[in-house]
Length: 82
Image 1 (cartoon, rainbow, N blue to C red):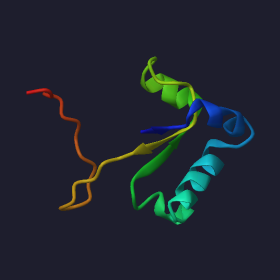
Image 2 (spheres, rainbow, N blue to C red):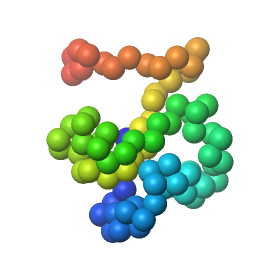
Image 3 (cartoon, rainbow, N blue to C red):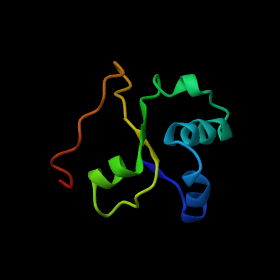
């Protein structure tokens, strides 16, 4: 998950999480339409905090890792570390 740095938090307060995500993608030369095929989800500050109390409460992009063979979401490694 990519979280905004504290100095970016001020800018984040004035924009929606989706607008921030589109801006971040455009910095990498990616259009907004690439979010779904890449398995990216936009999370609000409240959704980020609900994932873990250790995460900063800022808008974020969640990368859903896909299996390269069939592009299905990969399962969490529940037995990690071995």
